[in-house]
Each structure stands twice: as structure tokens, then as C-alpha cells.
Image 1 (tube, rainbow, N blue to C red):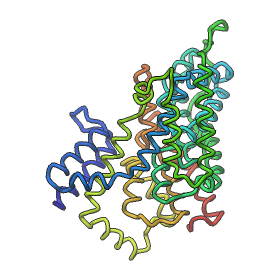
Image 2: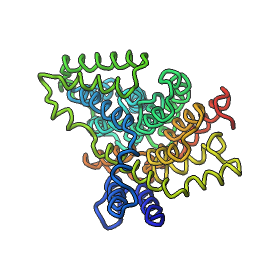
Image 3: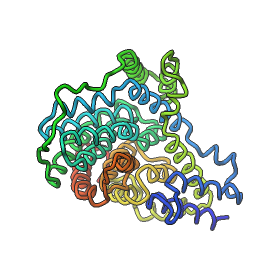
Image 4: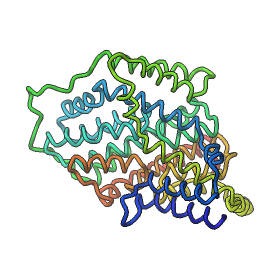
Length: 408
């Protein structure tokens, strides 16, 4: 049983790194699901154990935030904001800066994956109207979504998991995370400008074209929901219950059917989380992880200091992905300090900007762009991703060490 659990664990995380199974049309979610099925079929993991392994509060919070994002999507807000950025920024560099700034703010509130899913095709269409190369703008979208999402404990899936696992205070984390997040957004802009030729295009949006219209009622309903959610975060009510209450309010609509709202949820991502929880639990049962932690402890290599955590998150995020890496680390080292968890959230998020495979957010941008006829390649992303990530991690390490939150 130990051999099978270890084999499935290794193959599942190799699948996370590759993003697919060679020769088969199976993506990351399919790989994780197949691994879980094998473990259940051979008895290495029971259904009860698989269910107990799932961090339900994390899944519930992510689901609720997707409902909130769907509210804004159906109000026309995302289309309107993308159009306004293009119209107001005739200068290509100003356009890139505006895109990065707006995306960073949206990602901190609505989670990075759902924001880029909505904005990627709109960005392609917008820059195409200006006859601009869409690739640097798509990299800016992904980079800003990752960077901006680091600011809050609801900005991305791994931060949601870390916040829930460590019981971190939402506002205290924001205070620690905001300075390096703002620096990382600025670095994203500088890195892209330095590695791409951002030149004026030869087209423009017709002056008489009508911008996308916003359903004001649905938009105001969404803004009210955000205000209520922020207010609830100030109370002792658990974050997942606060978010679910807001999602329930949004589902009570006379204009948008619950089927439409629920259909906008990224069920693939939620299923990926559920399956990885199970696969990791089966591996934990073998005892090898515990033995490994004993070995690391004896050598002073626990991920509770920056000199260990930074290279670990950089390597893991760009091999198996930052979400699977955080799931694994939190399961194996459940008693990390507040400072170490804060560092893990920031470093794993910024590390996801190194390569195209570093985060699900990057992959979503590439796949959505492909549907719109734009190919964003591995090398295209790396030419900006590598410098922006190295600089962001350096500043973050200096910040966390400088304020005394995490030892070097």
C-alpha cells in the first residue's frame, strides 16, 4: 500500500508540473482525479478518509468568491473596465501600467484566477483594436493578477488555504503584505517594459463606437455585497461563513438565475483542490513525510526561515505549481508560525510569476488567449517572468526580514 500511495503521489505531482499526460487529453484536474480514483479503488484511501482530508472551509470560501466575481461579470463590469483602460490609455506604456494597476486591485478582492479568466479575452480584443502585440499585455495581466492577489488572504487559492490553515487575521496580514505587493506590481511593469518593445500601434478604437454597457442594478448589488463582506471580515464570524452568506444574498435574484451564477463557478479548480487533498492525505499515511520532517529538523532545514522557505517555494511553485506546493507544505508542516505562513503566502505567490507553469493563473491566461487566437509561449513568458520574480522575491525577503517577521 505504501508503494502505491507514493507512486500515485509522485505521478500526480509530476502531472501538476507537466500540466498534462503525454499522449492523452488529460489536464491537471484530470491527473489529480485519476490519482484519487486509483487510491480509492485499491483501498489505500477510504471514502471517509478522502472526505475528512478535504479542507471544507477553504473550498467554501473559494466557491463563494467565485459567485461574487460572477455577479460583476454578468453586470458587464469586467468588459466595461477593460474597455475604459484601452480608451483612456492611447500611450502603450500607459495602457500597460493601467492594466497592471487595475488588475492588481481586482485580484486582491475577487481572486486572481477568476479575474484573469474574465479579462484575458477582453484584453486581447482591446489591444487588437490598437494594433498592438497582445503578448506583453497578457504577461502584464498574469503578473499583476499574481502580484495583486498576494495582498489579501482571499486573493488566490493558496492564500485562502494558508489563511484558513493558520487562522491568520485578515487585516493584520494585509498590513504585512501591502508594501511588497505594491513593489511587485511596479516591478511587473518595469520588467515587461525592459524585455519587450512597447511601441505605438497603427490603429485606434473608432470614436463613435459604443463602450460596453453596465447593468447598474447588478453592479450596485455586487458593490453592496463587497461592502458587506468587508464589514463581516471585521467580525469574529469565520471568513468562509461570511463569504457564503454574501453568496447566498447574490443568488437571490429576480434577473440572474441561480443556474447562471453557479455555472460561472470554476468547478475544475475546486475539484483539483479536493483531489489533491486526498492524494496528499494518502501520502501522509505512509509516514514517509513525517520521517522526512524529522530528517530536516535534525539538520535545521525546516521552512520557518527565509533562507529555506524562499528557494523551496521558488522551486516547488515552478515544478508542481504554487497551489499544489502550498497544499503539500501545509499538510506536512501544520504548525508553522504566523510569520512563516505570511512569508509562505507572499513568496509562493510571487514565485508563480517565474514561468508560465508557475501558477494556474498564468495557465488560464495562456489558454484563454489561445481561444482568442493569440499564442503566449513558455519563452515569451519567461523573458519577463524571470526578472520580475527575482526582483519581487528579493524585495519581499528584505521586507520580511527587515520588520523582524521571519528570521533569515
